[in-house]
Length: 449
Image 1 (cartoon, one colour):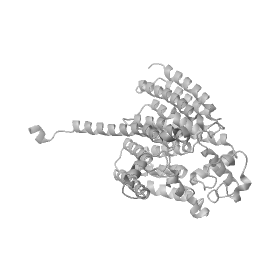
Image 2 (tube, one colour):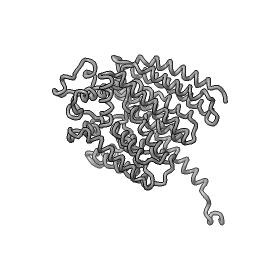
Image 3 (cartoon, rainbow, N blue to C red):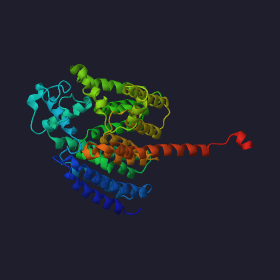
Image 4 (cartoon, rainbow, N blue to C red):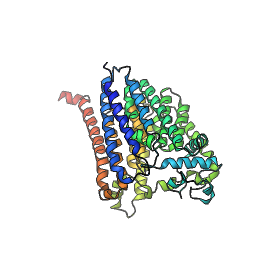
C-alpha cells in the first residue's frame, strides 16, 4: 500500500496548468483555439497518467488516495471559477438572461431576447453576448426553474451561477464515490470523471448546465439499486426537465413489473411543463429549429447516411432523420424487453444508448455533450472505455472548425475525431464475438467427430 505521491505530484502539475488556463477569457481571439487545444492535450496527458496510476490501488488503496483525488478535483474547479465564459461557449449568458426575464415576472418562452417587450432588461454586460437573440429559449422547464432560482440568489451574476453548477458537480463526484462502493468497485476510479479536463473545462470554465443535470441521473441509478422505482422516475424526469436527452435512459433503468417508474417519470415531466404552459405551443421553445439541418454541428454517422441516401433521392434529410430515429427506437425497445437486467447491464445499456444517440441521432455533438457519458462510463469500466476517453479528447477538434485556416480540412478533423472511435468499437465487438465462439461448449457432433 504505497503512499500515492505520484497522484499528489500529478495533481499539482495539473493544478498549475489550470491556473495557466485562466488566460482563456474573452475578449480573446478565436485564433487562440489551437493553443487551447495544445493546453488541453497537455492536461489530458497528465490526466491519463493519473488514471493509469490509480490502477495500482484498485484492490488496496492508501488512506490518502481518495483525499488527494477529491481534493485536487475541487481545486481544479475552483481554479477556473473566476474565468469569464465566452472563449469556448457563451451559453451561460442565456441562462442568466432567462433567469432575469423570470425575475421580472415574464414567461421565458414568450419572447426572444431581441423582442421589444424585453428591451427594459437589456444591459451592457449580459445582453450583448447572448447568442441567437432572435430565437426563443431552448432550455426546458427544469432548467428555467434553476435559472429563476439563481436570478433570485444573485441577479445577473455569472460567477454565482457557475459556482452553483460546480457545487452540483461536486455532488456528482460524491454520488459516484457512493455508487462505486455499492457496485463493489474501487472508489479510486472516480478519478476518471473527477479529473477529466473535459468535465472541468466545460463545467468550470464555460459553466454548462449539464453539471446540474448529472446528479439527477446518478440519483436515478442509486435509487434503482435501492429498488425505489418512484424515486427513479422522479430523478430521471428532473434530469430530462433540465437537458431533455436523459429521457433516453428510461428503457435502461426500467425493470420487470416496474411500471410505476415510467408513469411517475412522465407525470413529473408533464407537471414541469404545466408550470410554463401559459406560453402555449411556444413552451417547446427553439427545439424545432435546433433539430433542423441548419444547426448541425460535428456529426459523425449522419453525414455518411446523408451521402448514401442522397445517391437515390434528391432530399435525403427526411429519410435519414426517420431511419436514425427508427434505429434508436428499436434499440430502446430491445432494452425495454430485457426486464431482467442486472445493474451493471443497465449501466452498460445506458452508456450504449448515449453513444448511439450522439453518433447517429443528435443534431449536434458539442463538446459538453460527452460529460454525462464520462459520468456513467466511470461506473462501467471495460474494454470500450479507451474509445470514450479518446473521443473525449478528440471532440475538442470541433473548436477548430470556426477558424478559416481549417476550413479545407474539416473532413480530416472529423476522421481524426471519429475514425479511431469506430475502429475501437468494431475491434472490441469482433474480439468479444471471437472470444465467445472459442469458449462456447462444443456440440455432441463435434465431440463425436
